[in-house]
Length: 256
Ligand code: KIV
Image 1: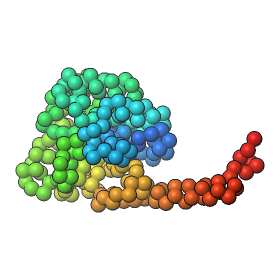
Image 2: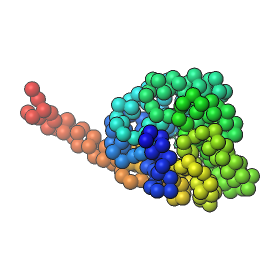
Image 3: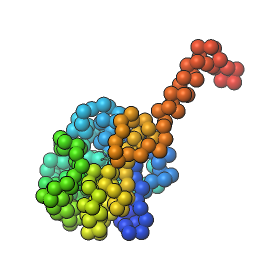
Image 4: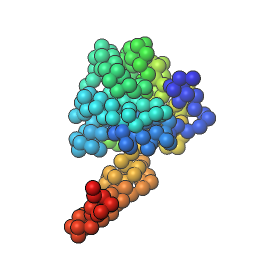
């Protein structure tokens, strides 16, 4: 069974575990526990302090993805197509092919619904696996508010989810979507939904790794911090600095 089919076959059987990674060493740890590793364009804010993911370029995504590829042995590796790299089917196909070729990833993720239906169809027709992304779309959203409060918005997300499935996506990320809507969308699709701030009813979950390990100082409602790596790094660096200043490091063991 192909890696993509394996992911789809998990629907209604077992939850899909996903995280983002931006580099080899982190990816190699996540690979032991994840079904999907996403090189998310969230790296724009997490690593580069950009105001939004709209500033992330294709070459930045490709370089980080090449690093992540080296850390993955078994998980499905998906790469975000950055803003302005899939404005029409021709542009999307050229850039998606470049991502697939240069990073050896297993597929790409695009944000949007009806607007990118033809684009997704073109990629899928050309054998490029596509993950969809609905709800809060960081590449175009200005409000960063959760989605699905009002009926027109709920109806649009439901319609978009069906369109994405029809276009051939193998899964859909639902970002910051109201619980009952995420449940409904998940129940009505054959492909799995992967939630971030979209309730336990999704077929799987994804988080940004820096959020989960407490490296990002920001606190988001949809994040649970499973570790405090920031304090672990602080402790280690503080001990190192003390030992260097007291000429305790390097000692004989660390010297030639
Ligand atoms: O860019 C990203 O990391 C994402 C996830 C939050 C789903 O799109």
